[in-house]
Image (cartoon, rainbow, N blue to C red; front, side):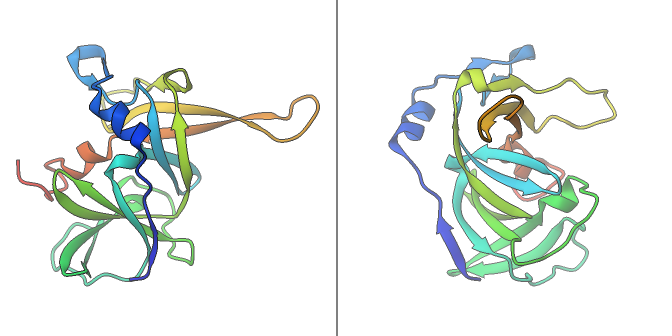
Length: 192
């Protein structure tokens, strides 16, 4: 697997995380995104997602993993990453994207989740964005048939696309708690 980039970890992001500047969400749960921070943005289908940059170890080009018999369809298999066997999860399949296509933009985001290294296949990686508290809106409340527990908020960024009237577009970013998703019992990756 060819390495594309090491994830940048900034002192500012570490300071924000270590300071404990987090608020409480409804129901008493800790809201990990309301304090803002830096997020790696990536695409799954037509949607753009963001995850905490501090969970990202590196970004690699996609290569077909070694398949594991009887694994769920979203677990594509495993790869050997410098002597560590890493499970590869296709987030497009897990999150029910309409079309899953592997091409030159498809990458694996290597994550460190609770001390375990896991790879997540995404359509493409965009950039790293710093979002302040005022740029993050609460996650929408959806009916009980839809599992939105891994959506922690919606980031909004104004994109200026030139001069004149109607040129400001708002870019929306679905913020995910990738640690909660990858360590869920359904994934079966991390023992509880």
